[in-house]
Image (cartoon, rainbow, N blue to C red; front, side, top):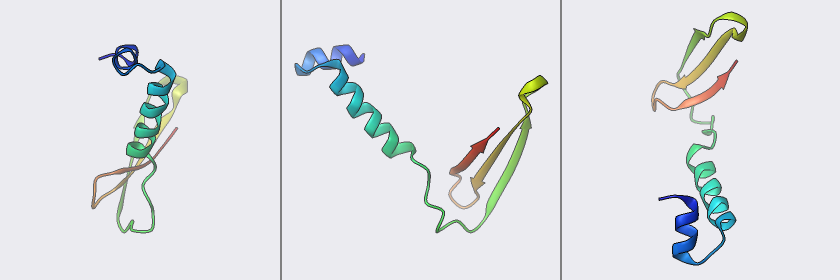
Length: 70
């Protein structure tokens, strides 16, 4: 269902639905807290050409991605 369809169904503006969705996604994908981090894995992937490398840091215990940097 599109954002506009949800807004029409609820009788509100699409911007309100978009704001709710943005807050929900921020909550779900916010950076994990590092205080409980005990073991990490670091992976570097070559992206090719001028892009260089992509570095991914993961929590080995939970499997959560802690950081992604280029």
